[in-house]
Amino acid sequence: MAIEFVKVQQPKTDLRKEEPPMVDVKVANPITYLKSWWKKIIGNEGMELRIRIKPLTAIAISLIVVTVAFGIGKFVLPFKIPFFEYSSKYEPSPTPDITYEAGFIGTMRVSGAKYFLFTSASESINLQVPERVDLSKLIGLRVFATGRFNSITNTLLVANAKDLEILAASPSPIPTTTPGPTSSATPEITPTPESTSSASPSPTP
Image 1 (spheres, rainbow, N blue to C red):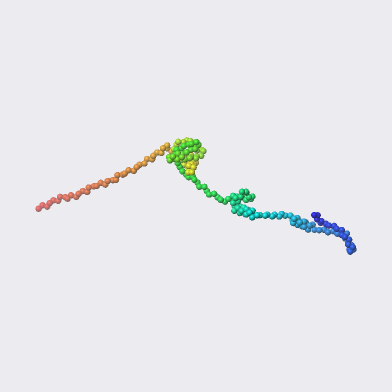
Image 2 (tube, rainbow, N blue to C red):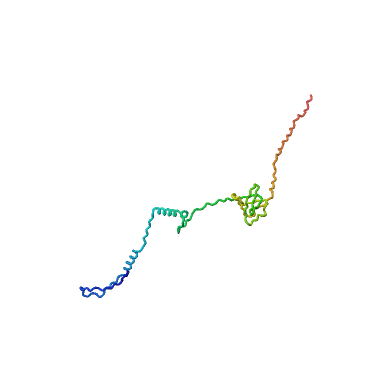
């Protein structure tokens, strides 16, 4: 639609007027036309959105919104929601230590690449040592080993070669003295001397 800012008209001759104008010029305000044009554009533009939700769909959407709001949407929904990341504040409880310091005396044995310590109670203790510790020189010897013992896997973790001490081939008995009965002192009886009457001279008549 063309907008005329300047309109030139040739007036009709009015015989009632003595001197009619030759040309009639009218100049309109362009801002008024721009405002009117803008209102027409805004009035015809826009978007009309209509959504029809059925009851079952509304219930499903409500469940999803509530699930996400309570922070468990990550475990329920099979898809990821943009700009939403679930962060759990649950801290796992510390795992108890099942190992403790222990020491064992036994004979060193080897099977393949594993070393064992056979105790006097016919118990086999697995030995776990660092690679830098050479146990080949201790095979067949009686050893006292200390370290962290795991009772579930029956494994003794030896951290250093100093924790392995070579003992004598057979335990030497410690001499002990057996206390015997001691004789009690017998008291000696000392005889008491008897008093003797001294002979007194008889008077002479």
